[in-house]
Image 1 (cartoon, one colour):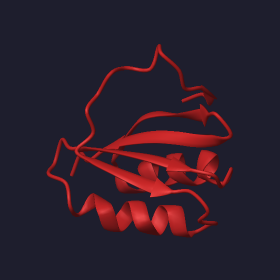
Image 2: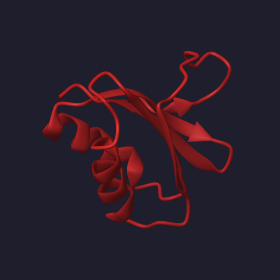
Image 3: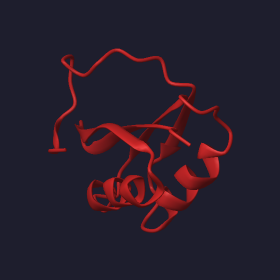
Length: 88
Protein backbone atom coordinates (compact mmCIF):
# COMPACT_ATOMS: atom_id res chain seq x y z
CA UNK A 1 0.00 0.00 0.00
CA UNK A 2 1.40 3.35 -0.93
CA UNK A 3 1.43 6.41 1.28
CA UNK A 4 -0.50 9.32 -0.09
CA UNK A 5 -2.35 12.41 0.95
CA UNK A 6 -5.57 11.30 2.61
CA UNK A 7 -8.30 13.43 1.16
CA UNK A 8 -11.82 13.43 -0.18
CA UNK A 9 -11.11 10.39 -2.37
CA UNK A 10 -10.56 8.20 0.74
CA UNK A 11 -13.45 5.77 1.15
CA UNK A 12 -16.21 6.96 3.46
CA UNK A 13 -16.28 4.53 6.35
CA UNK A 14 -17.71 5.09 9.80
CA UNK A 15 -15.09 3.72 12.19
CA UNK A 16 -16.11 1.70 15.23
CA UNK A 17 -13.39 3.37 17.29
CA UNK A 18 -11.34 6.54 16.79
CA UNK A 19 -7.91 6.94 18.40
CA UNK A 20 -5.96 10.14 18.94
CA UNK A 21 -2.31 9.07 18.89
CA UNK A 22 -0.92 12.55 18.31
CA UNK A 23 2.18 13.32 20.32
CA UNK A 24 3.02 9.67 20.92
CA UNK A 25 6.37 8.34 19.68
CA UNK A 26 7.31 4.82 18.62
CA UNK A 27 6.34 2.25 19.83
CA UNK A 28 3.29 3.75 21.58
CA UNK A 29 1.04 4.18 18.52
CA UNK A 30 1.35 0.46 17.78
CA UNK A 31 0.93 -0.48 21.44
CA UNK A 32 -2.24 1.65 21.71
CA UNK A 33 -3.63 0.26 18.42
CA UNK A 34 -2.95 -3.31 19.52
CA UNK A 35 -4.73 -2.74 22.82
CA UNK A 36 -7.67 -0.95 21.18
CA UNK A 37 -8.11 -3.73 18.62
CA UNK A 38 -9.43 -5.94 21.43
CA UNK A 39 -12.30 -3.47 21.94
CA UNK A 40 -13.79 -3.89 18.45
CA UNK A 41 -15.58 -6.88 16.95
CA UNK A 42 -14.12 -8.82 14.04
CA UNK A 43 -14.88 -6.71 10.97
CA UNK A 44 -14.72 -3.52 13.03
CA UNK A 45 -12.62 -0.56 11.92
CA UNK A 46 -10.29 1.63 13.97
CA UNK A 47 -9.33 5.04 12.63
CA UNK A 48 -6.38 6.85 14.16
CA UNK A 49 -4.56 10.15 13.82
CA UNK A 50 -0.86 10.33 14.68
CA UNK A 51 2.05 12.72 14.42
CA UNK A 52 4.93 10.22 14.53
CA UNK A 53 6.13 9.53 10.97
CA UNK A 54 7.19 6.09 12.19
CA UNK A 55 3.57 4.95 11.86
CA UNK A 56 4.07 4.87 8.07
CA UNK A 57 6.33 1.85 8.53
CA UNK A 58 5.16 0.50 11.89
CA UNK A 59 1.41 0.20 11.24
CA UNK A 60 1.73 -1.69 7.92
CA UNK A 61 4.30 -4.02 9.56
CA UNK A 62 1.99 -4.61 12.52
CA UNK A 63 -0.92 -5.39 10.18
CA UNK A 64 1.18 -7.90 8.24
CA UNK A 65 2.35 -9.55 11.48
CA UNK A 66 -1.14 -9.77 13.01
CA UNK A 67 -3.19 -10.46 9.89
CA UNK A 68 -5.37 -7.37 10.31
CA UNK A 69 -6.23 -5.29 7.24
CA UNK A 70 -4.68 -1.90 6.64
CA UNK A 71 -7.42 -0.07 4.76
CA UNK A 72 -5.75 3.31 4.27
CA UNK A 73 -2.70 5.14 5.52
CA UNK A 74 -1.38 8.52 4.55
CA UNK A 75 -0.67 12.10 5.36
CA UNK A 76 -3.44 14.27 6.70
CA UNK A 77 -2.49 17.88 7.22
CA UNK A 78 0.67 17.93 9.32
CA UNK A 79 0.12 14.44 10.65
CA UNK A 80 -0.92 10.99 9.54
CA UNK A 81 -4.15 9.02 9.46
CA UNK A 82 -4.79 5.32 9.11
CA UNK A 83 -7.67 2.88 9.25
CA UNK A 84 -7.29 -0.76 10.26
CA UNK A 85 -9.97 -3.46 10.04
CA UNK A 86 -9.93 -6.26 12.59
CA UNK A 87 -9.90 -9.55 10.71
CA UNK A 88 -9.32 -12.01 13.54
